Image 1: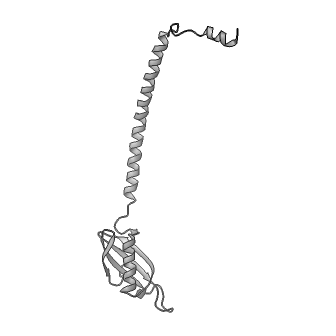
Image 2: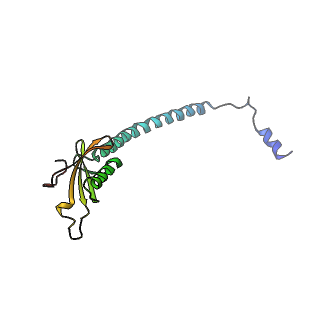
Image 3: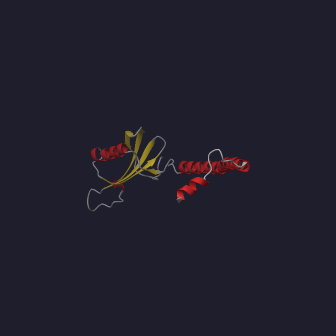
Length: 154
């Protein structure tokens, strides 16, 4: 008789297998504990998730640029301002800053000096523009009087 023959004799047949009643009860208790564990996990996780979403939403809201904040405008608006300076004012732009206002952009421009003797900070090299918005494009560009207080959106 071989080793495998002995194992075959030791294994009970399907009719001989009897489940212990205590084992069945413990099985359902385990299942009940798993359901309670998932429920407890959701009770702890859901408030944390809600608070995290609220905090992130608040940060995004408060980080939005407000009126008078320096912003990066759409490419079409920026291109329109450069084209305006070159074609109308016949000046090249050295520095440009856009400020978001209510319905328009206030633009501060420092242009290249015309001669080597002029200072960059000379008022003749500084321009202030009002650029009205229509979607992502500039609808009207207007030169403002020489900077007095140099306050955006006024």
